[in-house]
Length: 163
Image: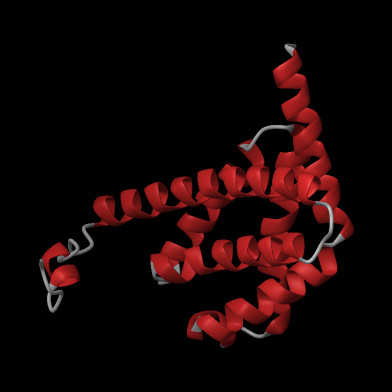
């Protein structure tokens, strides 16, 4: 293994340890944020929301500890399929990933160790970014296969002033 690769694996493992040591506060903040921004999740009850965030957090930490994103990406694909089948909007599903990432960022910025914090943010953002991409691809693929109506992309720009 090259020096760069071994440094990356070591830094990724340090990020996993950082998250593991702050699990409770990170998950509490993510849960509060998710329930505040998503009616779908706020109606699920605290235990179910926490369980879902726990599963995502566990896959994230395991991926970082292993130095590869396979676990969190596989989890994202599974979540996309399950939530699609139960009628969740893609935005609601992505909200859980975003709430967790934002809680990590908030936790990092509350710390004094900027070097470690930078490594944590780099690896967490890369892992969750990769997972969110896999989640969206899986979700959109399911929508295409099941014949969901296409998005009206023109609607996205209605009412927007153009220069």
